[in-house]
Image (cartoon, rainbow, N blue to C red; front, side, top):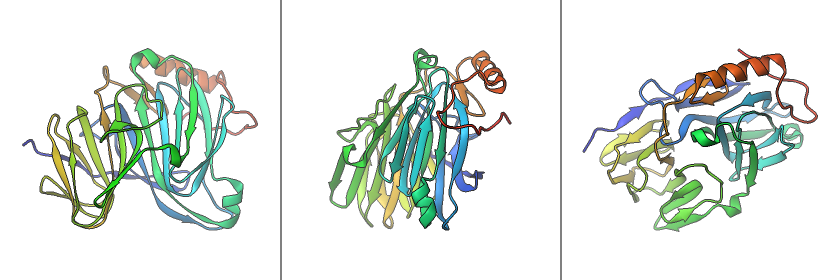
Length: 286
């Protein structure tokens, strides 16, 4: 058996929300289509406080927001305006140019709340990098679930474990939430070429190797592996088909061609970009 690649995430802060970011890493730039992975740590906001990520641009990727606690209001330049609740999937494909805003809904902000969740980026296949933008919202009840013998699997996006999510992914994808009760096991099949496991809470073993909370383990290609819960364990398993070539990430832009990123930077700086209806504030180029 090949040795697991284990990555410790770095701590970051996004508009006051503490996060852990295991991808991208110097050790691993992507897992399947996943090129960016943020764990928004459980944070209690008092009344009057909340998250407010102002208008900002994207190209060449899809963003997926999935919350365990809290709510986010998503608004974008396509005209979408959606409150995303815990367990829902918020899916936005940028194409050649999109802008969006993410903030705490006012009603939640007024009362105080807890926030905890994940936001990831999936690089678009080359044929979709310059395509039109798209947004879809998928309520928690629409996501397929398997719940047997103390192991609960919810398919957030893509397919695996005989489950298929309704989220319109652009390439073969695996993104599953796992909840294992103490002393239960899960066989992770080799149905996707690239896979990684991120432990949110609890302790687990992967083929006998201990994984602590907030660690990312990249699984060897082509190998079935057994996940064992040392304690009640909450994790996500993600991956899919390898990217169709390397990607460059610069600020909020992802592209296979560096020239596309330079053009996006020029356009955003010049104000030549689709805007979110009703929004005037924006985040400038770093």
